[in-house]
Length: 182
Ligand SMILES: [Fe+2]
Ligand SMILES: [Fe+2]
Image (cartoon, rainbow, N blue to C red):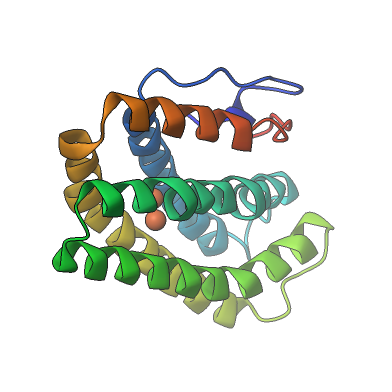
């Protein structure tokens, strides 16, 4: 589970198994996709500023940090341990490109969540529903792909030293996440 869910001023401990940690975060991302869809589905009848705030925190804090774990540490480690295998490099480049796409998809959703968290109505509910659907579909596909390919490969080829370094980097990256509302 992400550090930010543990409570205020929580100093995250270094995870014992960084690959399991990443898998847990993927599970949590699946849950967030469900929550986002439920949230926009119920927006007209029961808008929740608190849920908007919670989803906003995930999209602006937890998700970027997770992507940094992968792009700055996990993917380069796999590339180097994979002896620069061409197929692996293509997969990692594709996943990094999808991260970039996700950043674009998440931007307008974040803007609308900010409005709702402030007690205002969304500027365009129909468009927001479509944007959420595009984002959740892309996220689920991406996570499934990472779980099937990247996580399995990480289990097979990362050294003890890689795992220790990855775990340390995961903990360091979350030291600044101090909120506890999700
Ligand atoms: Fe990813
Ligand atoms: Fe991921």
